Length: 253
Image (tube, rainbow, N blue to C red; front, side):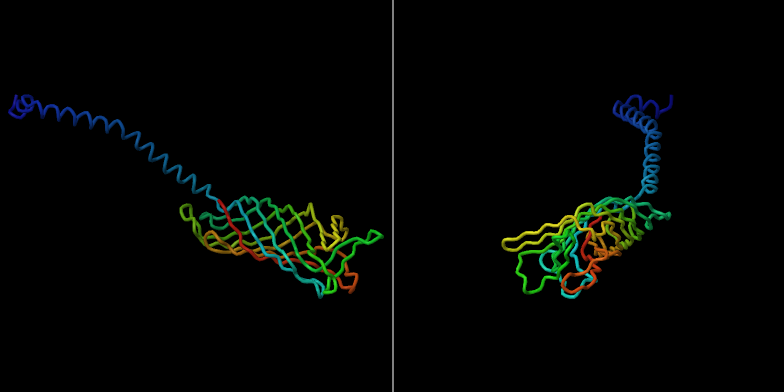
């Protein structure tokens, strides 16, 4: 037996340290395969998440509604706005997944405060009358509730780790107005009209949204008019009633 071996055996402290180091090395050797498998699973999971990455699938928007293509004398008056929300299935079409198309389902609630009275005559025909300064009234509103099928083409600068980015989304929506009401109020008189044959319940619109981060500018325009073959009773003008919506929209992953 050489000198070094005798020294180790005769020194209890060094003997214990050598034994501890051997156990630690054995423990590390046994754990290496587990660490390797865990790291491989994390890499595979990261790749999987990249392949499944989608963006902006829930939306909520608030708009201010303007009137276009209306007879002379028809103007906004009172509350005129809308709220919309829905779900869009984001489907990336390139490897980076920053260009996509989206299809979904949404709901839209609009209210137009304006000066076009909509009522019903004694012969059950619809009356469209422009309210001028000679008529005193409290409010005159046209409200709608629409279910929509939106389609969007999307471009964005997002990544799986970057949640603040530029986006430009554009597309169109096909909707069906399942409820509508024209309501007129004045002292001692109230008119509520929910059956308007001239009203086109099929709604078509084009929209655009763009922005950076949370707040995004949103605009939408009615492709088809609200009423078909409708004329004002006091001026005889055609009513090519459409809306231009301006507002903000929030997208949620």
